[in-house]
Length: 242
Image 1 (tube, rainbow, N blue to C red):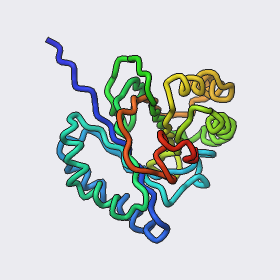
Image 2 (cartoon, rainbow, N blue to C red; image 1 turned 90 degrees about the vertical axis):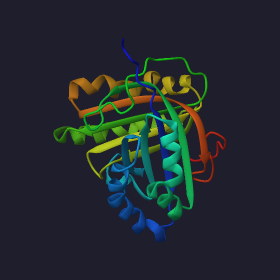
Image 3 (cartoon, rainbow, N blue to C red; image 1 turned 60 degrees about the vertical axis):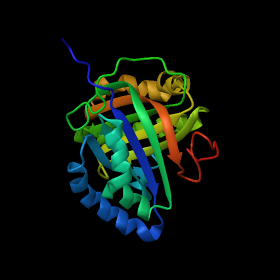
Image 4 (tube, helix red, strand yellow; image 1 turned 120 degrees about the horizontal axis):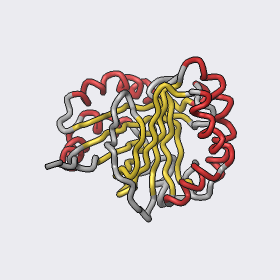
């Protein structure tokens, strides 16, 4: 008998710190990996720097905004992490804003650090808000052509009416880049992904140019959000900057 693994429970947390706490945030990026490695029930985790995603180089970096991505097999373990982990409590202690999205994977393709962190969900219909994560490890020889392709895609992204939040995410200043975005609906995300000319051209160029040594795309149902970032909850306050 084949046993289907449970659908992963994914948390994306964004923290915005005052300028005086930026050194504390940088320290947490170094020390929290050890705490996460000892967290019960944790399947996958990444500590993330963020940026505005307009160029995907060091000029994008936002030293006041940081992210923590965690993937769980059990919601109780995720809740215990939120209540007791020194990682979750530590970030909340230094942040002036904290926002969390609870996500259920709908589609996931590719690998992140050699694994499929969100499983292999079967595509299913979802009528509510969705989130997307793209992540890539750039091939060193193609970085310049990749960076030249980014600005027109970003301009299309920022102009999309269904976009509620978009931040660049990265595990390192250069070479390990991605995006986290939140959308009003699957249709809004699909309109951007497949119907905007610059983005469509970039997708078609990927296998030809070989930009990525490793890549991943995942789409999620947004099951719940809590807190605020950039002045509000992106799904409730449409004035939150994208």
